[in-house]
Length: 281
View (cartoon, rainbow, N blue to C red):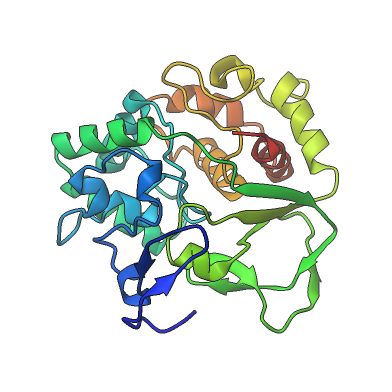
């Protein structure tokens, strides 16, 4: 990843240009495609120092997010507001050590005003969800390595065994690190996981869980105040199933999801995520 210099950088498909220094600034959302969304409220575009990061910086201006956080595009307003309340109260937390992205989210949530939350919720609810993830079943994958909060292909090349994992990587690391909402990802999943996940999602797997469409809609694109899950990041889906199972998402609609996740094995979670993420959002 380049050093945070001040030289403007351009990206294909955009008339804008921003520097790597600007990309590191979490109090200014880089707007590569201003024609593609309504006017941003100030909390989305700039946040408020010292603790409220610009929502559009981490979650991207078009709400597409990344493997390290969540996609916000199209979330129901009531659901968005409830999640911020849960972050603030401690009803939504991490079961393991807090990652830097989680720490930033918790600090931002505590500093938000009610007007900030309403403005951000209404902005992201208006945005259309975009297909940015390609799910690929494979026994072997490109050799990987960590880059800050996510994985990337090793510059040395080579391959490695996937095993019972999901590995999700940006197709163009620089584009993602420059916070372009159009950055795409490939998620490698175990062979056969999509079909196994489809059975679990549609039937509940003979008591392993509940059919997801009962709450999330027949196409998993949301229903009422229940969010869409089709086409979401598979690593995000697995993290949330794990947190529901271990009681670390206990607010709002947490109780039904805790019951849904309580009997799932780790393999079940991977299979469900593989299928759900393979769907058109």
